[in-house]
Image 1: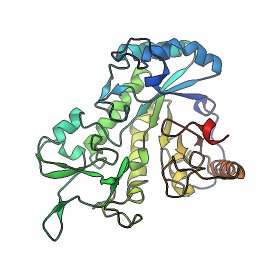
Image 2: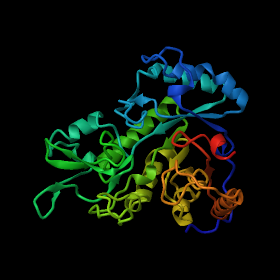
Image 3: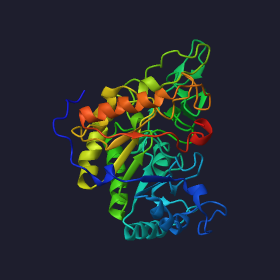
Length: 361
């Protein structure tokens, strides 16, 4: 664990800011996008005075990048363009200008553990085994059982469908690609330095355009273990097993994030928050958010949002819980951050969870 902080870091604007999440598809529609009834970027811009009145300093918009919308924008097909449902690049420029007039900022939701299967990077990768971008994604040959039947490289289950394998067969190249969430969201291969450089370029593009930073979706999934070993059997009888213990906070995650900070984030005055599900070890948390670690400003810690979950269940299976649990969780992480000069982001709901008013009342 990082050493006890002797001198706490100076106050910073991002520590004192109120960040407001906007789920753009349902926030407000002005009809400027090409999907009637969908919220759009101009709808966000039209409500800035209201948001400023609420005390908001930073707007965090869920993904607005070009996407087939298999997973509501968390499947990005073009990191440099805006989905026409939401508007245009010019609409984003206008939003940033209007935010600046009000001393407000825009934080973007960036998904770089995986992309859409419609992303040009993946289309090249799957086109042939000798394509230069083949190694930008995670490909593995099949295994075979005793009867000669083809099977996936390991027993990992898909996160958004645990009855299914996390590996998808590609008939053309006769290999499997890893897609932890859905078959339409192939995982990027962060082992490849060219892929990492491409991600860095994406971040520079948006920071140069005026974004103040990023919320990084499932950033602790980016490093998978060598050899892709089987996950432990936790659901006996099921063909595939949850692989969280294999790829959450993987062997090179901290190395990749430090590189990202060194080559990109440290050159700007940014706010960054990493979504890091299934991580509760204080040592692992401080490796990322400790001020001396040079990785991310803060992460989302799931202890509070999962407070009413049955152990081992999905987020919609709830249990009774004592209110003292809130005190215990807050105290635990406040002490941790003070002792190791870190910063924290506790939350009670987001776009993946039920409304807190219906859970905590």
